[in-house]
Image (cartoon, rainbow, N blue to C red; front, side, top):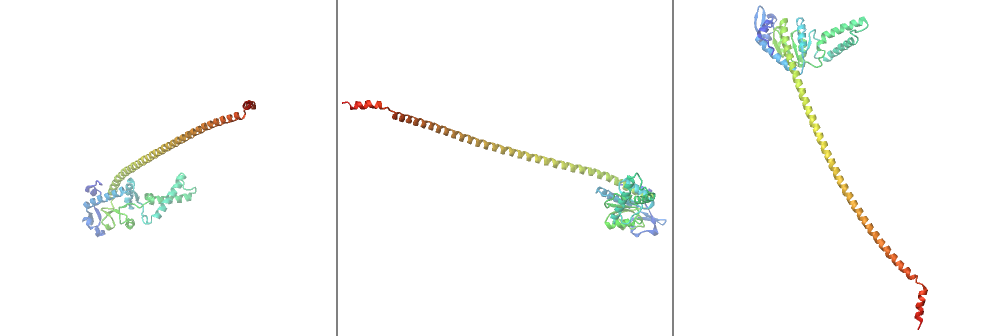
Length: 337
């Protein structure tokens, strides 16, 4: 994974331990020999442990978490800072501030103060104050905050792991990580206690070449993991978008089907209502025609009745108006013998 060989470790001087009188007996399993009063580290174990640590860091990055590099030793500061920035991870290389992990709220307040002063400078073309003494005081405060907190300014959450390059010097950082259950990856020299470390890399923690080799190897692995994580995240986002699009299409189809069913139902109801209306109208028309026929028949009957009455009336009137001159000759004729 790292691509390193035993020769690379040997050339970097990773096999040199501390003086034999300063050793920690717990490191005995990792010691190959002692020469000229110095312990020689077994590099065959070192390269195996280095690969295990690199694989772990890769898994941390693929899990979406960040890594905090810690190296406040003078010869390691610049090397580790560059390696951490190259792979986009956090770093503390000036001084470990007590409570960086266990009292993170206080650290975040200091970060907010740093951001506040930076905003003042940004809004005033780099000028912190119109007053010389106040400007100098703010400048000193800002420089100190940037030096100590610049590498963790964006660390809103706890890191997924710590990478330490001298556990004796960074004992407070290691203790805080152990207290919070944060895994620690560290280069452990022959004078240190490996029981405090989750991923031990037995090796020289003083030589700048050794520190550079390990830091650059980790940076390379983390960069590759970052690229893979970005690719996986992009694929995951595309898959989520595709699923959402499919759900939206299914919902649209379902709503269209519901609208179609509702329209057909409405049309069916309207058709039935129209048929019923036509039936009622037909009945009404038939009833009106029947009534009209009955009225016509009644009218005819009335007319006929009126004609009969008129004839009777005329006959009666004619009978009543018979003259006496006509009746007298009849009587005289009756009386003549």
